[in-house]
Length: 129
Image (cartoon, rainbow, N blue to C red):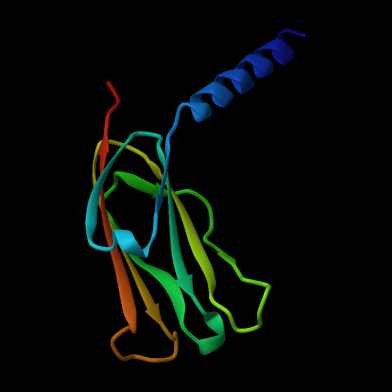
């Protein structure tokens, strides 16, 4: 019984700790910007792309230890019309105070030329007061 109460208390603490985090959404309009978040805040990055053309957004690098990737990226397609662009989505979390830089490239994996497009974002993670 004590174990169950302890487990329940941990779940409640985890829920409230998770609930205090802010969620920041970034998209292509935020390209080449510097942004500030707090530890444990969540970051969602949405980039529009059309995989039917062979192009795909990929995370080229995540530099610095302030951000951690939080799960696998997803792709949400627009089911209203075949061949219409959808959203590539990545999830990150502020891990520790410091700086991180992210670079995404929009390219065909079989081509070795310069990517068609890129998206760069700098994040400064702060310790909350």
